[in-house]
Image 1 (cartoon, protein in one colour):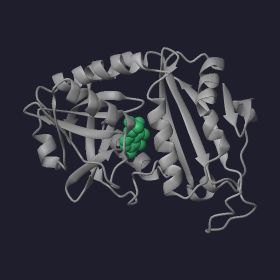
Image 2 (cartoon, protein in one colour; image 1 turned 90 degrees about the vertical axis):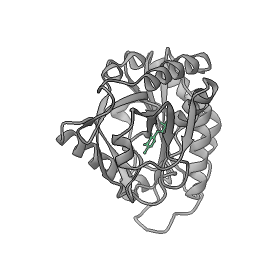
Image 3 (cartoon, rainbow, N blue to C red; image 1 turned 45 degrees about the vertical axis):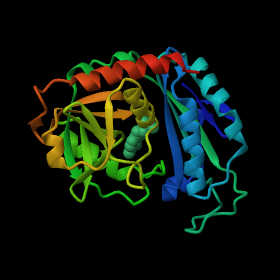
Length: 284
Ligand code: PLP
C-alpha cells in the first residue's frame, strides 16, 4: 500500500514519524475517515469542514496542505486502486524536540498522514441485512467529544467489552441517556419518529448524521433531536447507527433485549438505501 506522510507518497513500510510526535505522546492529533464508493469520495467537503473545526478547537495552525487534501485523497485512491473503502487522515501538532505538556511553537511543522483501507463491497455489507447487537456502557470519555481527536482508548475498551459480551458494539451512556456509539452516532425509532441526541460537546457531530437527517426530512420522515434513555431505547421499534464506514447500520438488540422482531427495521433499511444512493450521486 502507498501512504502519504508529510508531503511524500511512500510504501507503507518506509513511512516514519518521530517518537516525539505529540499524537504518540499526548493523543494530540485530529483525524477524519472518508468513505470511498466506486472509487469516489463520499461527503468529502463535510469531513474537510469538520477537520478545520477540530484544528481550530485545539488551536492547531492550519497547515498549507489543507488546500491539497482532495488531490491527496484522490491520488491515494488511484494508486491503491480503491474501489470501495476508506481514506484515513490524521494531523498532529507535530514533533517538537522533546516532551513537554505546553504546546510547542506554532511554527512546529504538523505531522500529516493519510492511508487507504480497501473494503470491497462496503455498500452491500451483509451485516446490514442482519443488524448488529449492542451493549450499553458508562460514557467515561472526556468532555469535548465534538472534537475528533485520536484519543480513542475508551471507545476501544467499549468495543472490546461488547465483543466479550458476544455483541458488535457499545452505546455509551451519560446520566442514563445514550450519547453515541464507540465510533458512530446512535438513533432509535418509535412510532415512525427518528430520535437522536442533539448536537453538543457530548457527541461527535457526525457527517453521516447530518446527511441522514437531511435525507430523512426530505423523505417526510419525522426527526426529533433530543436525549433518549437506555429504557426508551430498549422499548423502541427499531434502532440504528451512522458513520462514514458503516453508513446506516441497523441495531437489532440492546443489552440482550431484541427490538421489534429482532431484524433490521424498515426505517433504518430505507435510510441506508437512500443514503448510499444519494451519496453516490454527489461523490467526488
Ligand atoms: N461518533 C463517534 C464517537 C465517532 O468516532 C464517529 C466516527 O468515527 C461518529 C460518531 C460518526 O461520524 P461520521 O458520520 O462523521 O463518520
